[in-house]
Length: 139
Image 1 (cartoon, rainbow, N blue to C red):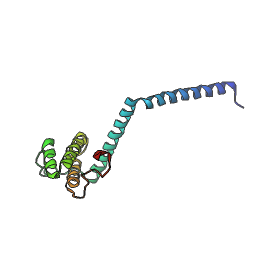
Image 2: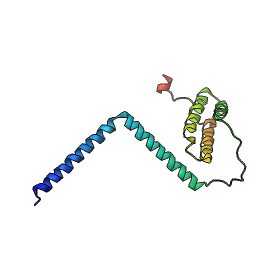
Image 3: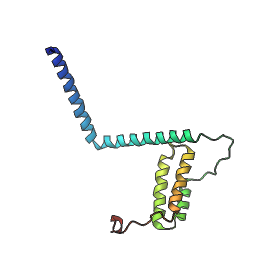
Image 4: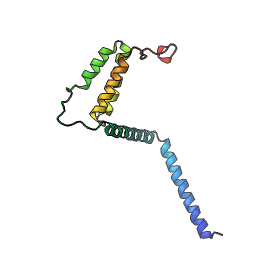
């Protein structure tokens, strides 16, 4: 049998737990907290991806020749030109913008790989450039 003191103590713990849950649920409803949590999850995902990439492909020797430097606007301009149609050119701008925003958190070789994948997708004739018939974008 439990004493009144133990019951009171358990009741105190339960009320504290309820208070914590209430505060936590209030935070979850706050859009600013949700955005911060989402940003933290994205940063953690990018870090895991970069670490996995670095384990698979270690840094090259410093004596290896480097690729010529190119700025983001030049890269965007070239991919948009190669894209072949205005819709894909717009996609090139959006995709390069997204790549640029996360590039500083990734190894350079990983960024180049993403750029090559973007170029491959934009130049693929089977890649859907036009929205499907009847979609919201065509109405």
